[in-house]
Length: 629
Image (cartoon, rainbow, N blue to C red):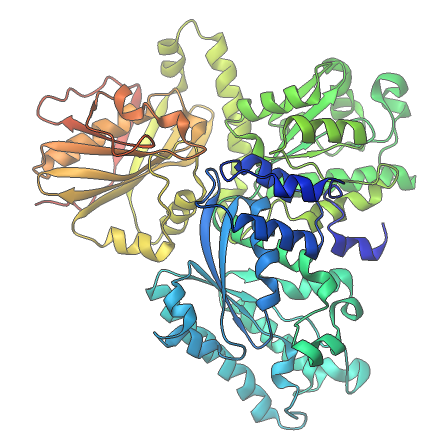
């Protein structure tokens, strides 16, 4: 793969020949067609065309999350608006963008009359370039050089504190290295040189603890000589070469998607000529190419190493192969250099069905939607078929004759972008594998009661607090399917809720005979006169069918009664993904009140007549702060 292909988004299929016609024919309610068109490697001109078409939409297409983005910095970013809006579609976002005045960073945040303040963004990105020091000579002036970084750090802290109070997420970009040096190889050792200043600035960014967009790494990917364009800087103060707009826009919006829980969760792997070279059914274990000793074998081994590393950070792995099941499993057991084992695979689909059907089965088995999957396959015909039948599945374009490039392509595509990493994330893949075993037990059990009794489930209720707050905020922003209202709260807002005397909130953790499922539910109730209004109720789809919701309702009802309440009020707000819970309150015995709209309904439960459910889960609870009238 040639270097210049990276900034053409080469992991995406080329734009269709009829792009303009398809773009002009988009209907305002067809989010699927809009996203399918955005899932191509679009040029800056095509991104502008798609963005222009979006302006005709009278409302946010169903299935896309609205998000307001403000960008502040020392360069001209106005030319990025259209590209950002169109690129965000790939990541499930309907983006509205506002640019701060060039060079007015702190003022844009602190001044209540600034255009950024009036815009009320959900997210603000700070984008600085090395030109902030271009007119300053700091070499030989150590105190001044140190002060330059400290002043920026103070500004960033001030902006971060201000935005936190406004429940706005603040993201900082790292700074690409300057394309010029003063001392050559000595530059980064001498205090006050541009390259040393940039190194010190980036170190400060990483130490800040704020979410980061690593633009420095992006510039390294394409090369600094390609990234920087002095002529365009002097002409229009463009922060990087105009050719790189699609690449930059995709990196920014994939980070925003991760912030809203839109990153992919599962890597699905083909086998023949993907995890190994050759065809296992024809060549046998001894004949496939895998491992040390040949360039091809090492390339396929590198793919396995990357897949395993992704699993270690919490990404699920699955197999989708046209093969006999027993034959497909042979290398996992018998090949000495096969590092991926069957125990690493959450779902193993090897049969002669079409791959789109098998991918649907994988998603269903994992309680995921297709837009959580990435499918890696060497066969261009299979890739095209999956894109046609399941456009929500991400299918990277890979050169089938050069598997050595595949790990780089997967990395560059950013399907698994993250804005945080917790210990609980590392356990996720193992939890999903255990869940598949639970489903196996369910099939073997004579009836549902036998199955649930055999699970030996124990639920621990925990109040919000510093130890669980980051995970609670993460779940609130990631959970889409079993989420009654799909309200999104920042970590700062979660802290405010837990300190609100009129709120009752908790998280629930579930353990069973197969292991710890982690935090599987978050509930927020708000006191309204003699009732509790259930503002947020979300659950992990991994625990569906296990009467978790019945156990949780028993607990909520008990606490509400203790607080002197006589009614629970439920609220369902329909989204493109939460149809699963449309009958949630009805199934729990709530009575319907008049629906506000066709996509919104209210429910109530009389606590005086409520009889607790008989649920097969042992409930334990730490002492919660009671919210009494």
